Image (cartoon, rainbow, N blue to C red; front, side):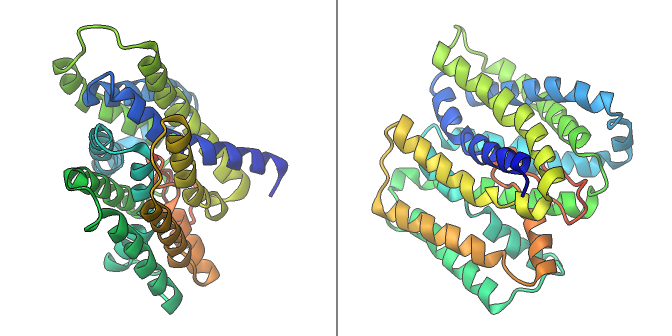
Length: 320
């Protein structure tokens, strides 16, 4: 990999691990619809001129139905659920749960007629990863957190569904134009919800900084850098950030917010990460196909998804 590729890879590994921390800070000071509107609205305002300058918007019109479906499962629904869940869950736990996205992608791809073959190693990876999720969300989880954990798992399911839509229905669309259009669509949906819950006073500088970071760095700038990374190293290599983002999310939660890292969380992270690596292994062709569908799931926009056609974007851990 080139030096530029390594710099882009390092930047994206960190940038898409940050949203969980910033969401946790922001939801302490503004209602969730206001936070999501700010993120999608500012992101759209920054990316739409870029897409227009590259003439990437006009070609989207014939695909508006699938674009709307993609935006719903990659932005509109998961960003609301994730932000709502983080009003009660630690950001580090949210990041760990989102790490299950590659596992869910492998399962959904198989269930929906994907051509990639699940070998014995990949089946073992699915089982190991699911064991990690069960350890996080199972009997040991605090009763009051179960609903929020369920919300984050729904977010992970959405993030796993979006790349499948993108790779099978939208793979030929220009990435920045598609991302900008999806953000604008989400902004239109959230505008009335945010208006109904608009805060009566200006949030603190800490909250405003978190909101700005989410919108500018973790959304607009992140997508420009991620598409540059795809062009530099290809989708399969770029998808490796999927395995690093959760570690960044956990580290920041523990370091910045003094969140507690329990032994169960540490074991769960190892199981989920190890399971994800095994579940996306296989023959060279199958590995590249699945890796391209996964990346970057937890972008919290989730995430970019696509089959080896490099034009397929993602709006996405996410995350976050």
